[in-house]
Length: 478
Image (cartoon, rainbow, N blue to C red; front, side):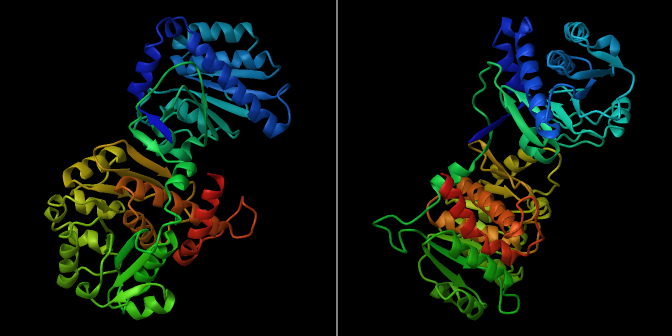
């Protein structure tokens, strides 16, 4: 697992080092690490460090100090380093002295022939968009940018990307990762974390990695049978609109080696596509399940609402998605009165209907608040998926791309997560694990057999076909 920390946690960890912070040792360690990353990038991009050209955009305070000390280290390796001081009277004094002594040049404008530019404008203490002077500088930058700590203009705790802000190819941070590194992953680029000797514990924002997901993924053991691995019940789609039912049910079949039962009027289509599914026309004849998925393409009329109510009245884990969430928005007490696990998987519009307000700028706080209000686990969809249950750390997943932004992809996610609920995973872990496999399946489907640096748009059927390869690949690396 990777933990992501808020600014206050980082500041407290730095302060706990005492003299290491006060004497500037932490800053010099950070600067040395920053210079090392810049050197690696120069070697990768132009084949050499010596003779390269690097520009620093330097703000007031410690972020600018990191950049200036790093510039001094780079000068010692034969790099031509220039610095544009946005606030000359407030530049970090010791860093500026070291930079000048090393032979660094102070300039009035960023050159056009630089190999890299270092964003040392603002760090953890920054708020809001780039100020006009800094924005004007970065408008003219054409070289790749390496950000110090956080790309300037990105909120460190919420990941809000203000306009304007810096978009980094690489972000170099120190001691521990910040929340923005996952919540604004695309803006931060590749994140390199430098050990500077601080101890940061107890992250309340955590990402499962491939190893975590692969280790927890249910696979059949020597004594397992179809029932012991979880029976997933699916209520989705209709004979008029069977697509959601096929995608959701197909994902549940692909996710585990258990059993899938389908309830609804699309039974004929489902069995024709997935003959291993046991289909029934109504709940009374459905048979026993370990968890329910209800809602995708299932309608919002009175009959659909009654099915949602009946499922939520059981003592089984339940996942509610899509049309089910629209129904639920008018009957929140159906969830609030439950003792069994409930997983809700809204996109932003569905979230607003449930919460009575837009998600807003702080997605982590919004999802956590709704989870607490409803006594449920909430998965907010998006490239950055946020999962909260109001008790443990919030789980977050960066899809790494937006290939899954296609109609029907949410139905696939519901089937995946529902099967994991039936297999016995907690709602938090089932949701986060499903999101990670879902994202990886989309990437595999988009790549096909082509160059892994390329990709092509996919449909939800392609995404569904990528589930088993995604699970297989993750387990092979565990």
